[in-house]
Length: 89
Image (cartoon, rainbow, N blue to C red; front, side, top):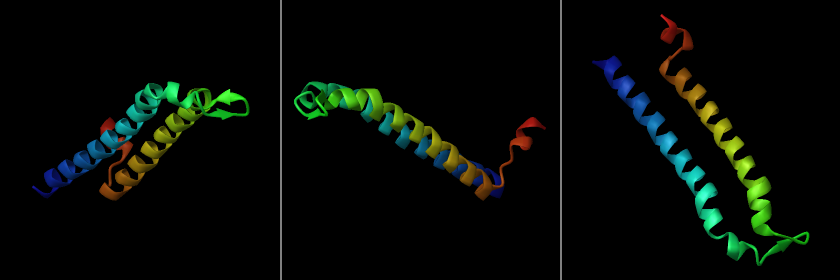
């Protein structure tokens, strides 16, 4: 029973982090794009801010999302004693 409870807790924490990171992805991808016209009024080095958000900001955020998820899952795996080799057996 204890192992089942640990598995449920592990899965719940995994889903919670996944939902949070997907929400961040959604905001960066769709919400910022929705306000791109408003951001076009703000210029940075002669180019609209929306350009910088799309060309540089979003890819950086995507890489940070991937990095954070991998870091979090490695921590969670160590906390719950999950090993990649367990899945191969």
